[in-house]
Image (cartoon, rainbow, N blue to C red; front, side, top):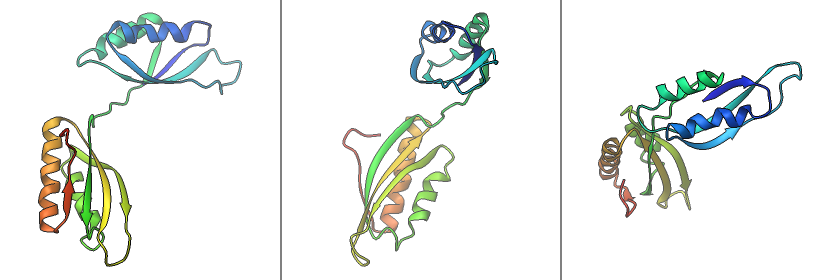
Length: 162
């Protein structure tokens, strides 16, 4: 969320109080004084978590404080799972493997770290998948299992589950 508020002492603290009032959790606050001194407002970026349905009340509280909400970005990929793949990943088209998950629209590969010891030796990759919900994570892992079976890859899944 990007906020704009008056550049006066105590405004930042006053702007953060409504987040707590609606049960939100502040993850990060980014505030840099790069604006010219003659400007009466300042911009603050806040990363936060809110319980479902609390955003409208938070926006009302911000307005009451005189804080303008300039931008709201919503993180939709809330669930994350990291797995290990072992096999001839490059020879079996790694980009196709990633695309099978990304095409779902509700899960994406957001991290990939590859180790290739030799040209003809199996490689290994740590793959991180993020999804919109638990069911979509299970679906993405099932897709990965199917691709792994087709391409003779080994998948090592986390013990705690998705």
